Length: 340
Figure 1 (spheres, rainbow, N blue to C red):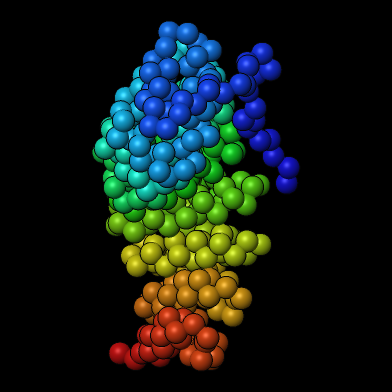
Figure 2 (figure 1 turned 30 degrees about the horizontal axis):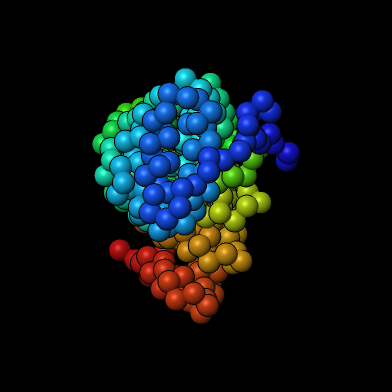
């Protein structure tokens, strides 16, 4: 499906010429001085030159230790949209390096960056969200985003942002939910994510299902998913054309069906036949999650009764090429065939 892409091209009236780079050790200090210049063109040219330099991790290291973070933090509030665009681009490039991510976190830049959540320029917001996503890949980064209290704002942006940015937000939430799911739950994330499960873009469906999988880990998340009647949609997604969507839906069912409420919600939604149909799926992650979900469902008398005639399908997985799948199948076989 075709989708609109956010353009990173600069306005045609902006002179793209980069600032001349000073020789040797003077290069970065001179750029840092120019970033503070009252002259707009000087600031723009310096940022363009800096964008090129920070692709090199050695320059990132030098920039962090020469105090660039404070200069760049100030430029996030600049009135000129091109300055904000190039400043967020610098942070985005720096976040691609370990030293850059650590520098951003140590400089307490999460809150200043979050002030751009409502920036009128799409590319500025995209750069900011992509930076957040890269930071969240670190446990410390995900924790910093949670501690900054930004989860509720990120969840609310799922209802208004462009599809491209929604994917970045969902990826960020995936990592942040591993650190703490309760902010998202309190922000009403479940009904919003539920709506994304039927999105026409596979990337959004995939990442929404992944976020809901993380939400289903704590008991409160399982209860919320059942209350919002998301389980029937998980069951429908077991037939999705995308393997990651199927795997995430099965994983969410695997966690949700740990509770009695979740078990019967899945049973009443016809989960068992669809899960059984996937125990031979080409993707090992799908097979594993389906077998584990079937194991929890077989803990109910109703589930065991339905599964016993088809236990041979589980037994065929005992010789699966994946060791974790074969081990899960062995456990499932024991549970299904258990007799009081």
